[in-house]
Length: 473
Image (tube, rainbow, N blue to C red; front, side):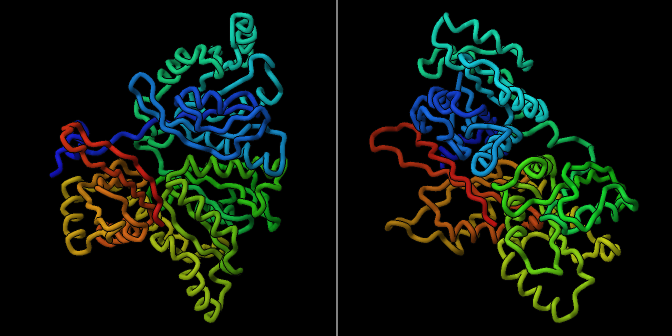
């Protein structure tokens, strides 16, 4: 076996730890991207002296005092906007809710604004550690401005100057102290012995609340024919199939998120947060209508979140035989990318086949939790590659030196290679993983770590290369 591959996991046979995630958030034009550039030591984040330059979440590898972490730059967060600005704000809130530590940046020279106070209220709801950066403190004259930010009530403000680097070391020390003991795993995501958490999601009026009431055996939530009745995520402990489950009923995910305002906007944000708190999602589809773009977008959101998934085709009792035949064809064609998700055909109102939900949930969660030992995985991979080697790329055939499962929930495999593996071949590996090991109901994540050859006469270690995440569906 390649000696460099062995040494990479000598101290950790189960694979590398997941790096902690630090989300940099704040209202527009407070210097978030400048601070990101200062921390990573290069000008990768676009900086301009107008608000709104950064729109998407962008992740960067960073380190401080030999501790690696992922730094996520976000767009300006404003809670009273609509259109594109609302979409940017939603991305910032999503980053905050999924991070291990939140780095909240405030312009000390401006002081506390209404937007800053509104963002703080949302940050408190995430229950994540928050480090407060008082930016634009370029010298001693601005120190009192930083002290005034104690009034935000989220702890000590650390005066920094992203432009000049002043105070950045103390700020990063505080970030390191806030890291969880087990990076990348939130306290809520790993409740030992607690009920498994199930999010009921789907577009409005597909029957989520009706299904929750049916499995509960009583009316727990309001049901109405008007789409959008549910706006808050509702947690309910329900005995089902001999065990307790925590069901999270959510507001329907709307078609035009960018046009949402007011209560509907926050309902959609809460739905995303509910999915992050869940372990498995039941995606409801109204089969009395044709599959819609919103249905596909909801499913994509579950896959991207890395949660286990069960497809529940609701209102099945309303279909005649002909419609059922053509619907099967429609599902096979449009949902082929998630053919791994177990499917149950139910009628939430009458209770038809609702009892099939529990076995489907159990299979999905078992796959989501599954681990394959390193030895077993590499024996399997050696036989697979011998029978079907990777295709030649650029006149050279890449070799897969070693593989390990880095984590579960969902299963994440890292392939150590001598070159880039084509998308089709990675999909082939993922398909064979499912055929031979199961993983029904769980997304599978494959990454590559490409090893560079040692320089002639060098004797130095080979480069670890880059990890290239790729969600195969």
